Length: 233
Image 1: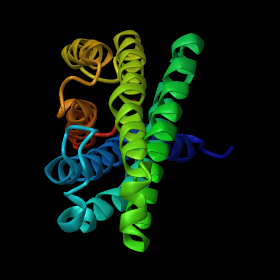
Image 2: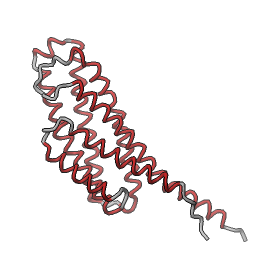
Image 3: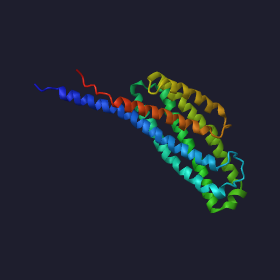
């Protein structure tokens, strides 16, 4: 009769590794997303005036920096999609259908609005390089800047706030992140929902919060992976 114990031990080892690979992947993706988005937002904020009705004088010296910042956003979006995916995988059977739908939908809407605003801004920069006078005199610059400002500082931030609320609510039920981080996320989410575009640095709140929870998940995962592997008695 074949001894099944080696097979059982191998199965437990595989389950143990899989259990910690998922949160580690979520943490790495979240950190990458945060760093890329923070870098992009800081470059834009240091280059582009906060007033959406500016005359466009910054374009002569800051168009290249703004273009670099916009090119970082697609990579941030890819990392964020991975972050969403591995978090959902981590939730597994504990995933609440109501909050999971809001969590997934708000995350996709956040990305869609972020990409749309970046595409409009990129179009303005490309038009500036080809026909500067037409861009300014036709009013396309003012229109594009206003639309980008409203889309990023109002709608995109609202979706980020909804994503934070759903993520924190799921966390309080499942314990995927520390409870104090979940409560902090709820407070910051309310700030994003009620800020109404009045604070020029408000967009940084979301990636900073994702960075915080990602570092926490990674540290917790690395700490536990150093413990002995339970293989049964």
